[in-house]
Image (cartoon, rainbow over all chains, first blue to last red):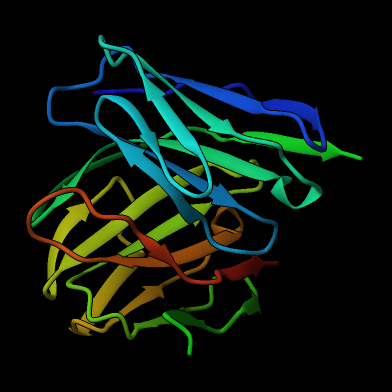
Length: 112
Length: 114
């Protein structure tokens, strides 16, 4: 069963680029990689999802190397409002079948 | 115009009591979930329903019983509450069929058992 490992916490400053890496050595062929963001007292919110190579949206980029055993969430020019916990999720979610392996989360603190 | 709503937001009760948490989604999704998040922020999936059919039932005490009266609702009933049940419980929903879909989470219900 795929297991995900992420750093427990990270510190950054406003305007910097932040990269959070998730390790998932036992990722299966069918697994996708998804990242969620969670603010205090709120439910997690979807950020980005990918299968391989690079995915970019208006919020972040996701880099996945060819072996897919890790992935890196990249947040460009963070602001104070990006202070949150970021979760890496490996699995699939389709029809009557799903496998969802959540990481323990990375607590990102963005400082002025 | 809430997408996934849960009631109550806070629930304080004593050990041994029975309580329910309700969840409703107005997104037209087929799949709904219950998660438990402990004090260390670990998110553990408990149950998942697809079109009112139970498809995920993780290792959860049988004191926890989900009920899905229709696709838009998934309620969680907990019998004989224990101190270890104190946590934040999140309901989520997602579309189904085809590729991987993102989950939409509710605001959470903070359960405190004393």
